[in-house]
Length: 69
Image (tube, rainbow, N blue to C red; front, side):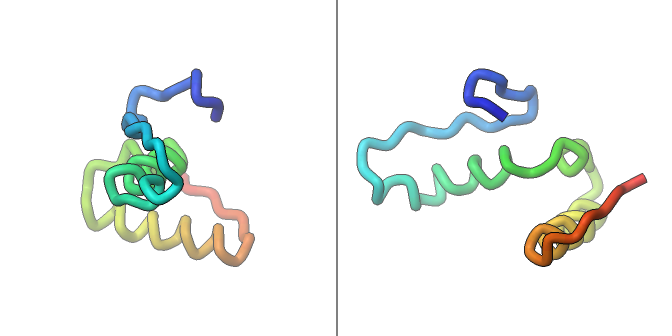
């Protein structure tokens, strides 16, 4: 997704002047959230979100495909 096409659930990422600032939690956390698939953004139950996030990260790490129904 390009910078210009921000989704409704995307978080705003603060600008930094130094490379060091990009590693700050205030920058890294919104970037990580914005990189998640939209189906994870929509989950309202914490336990369900954690389970599906674990599956998403596992599949991403091992380059597996998955489909949530």
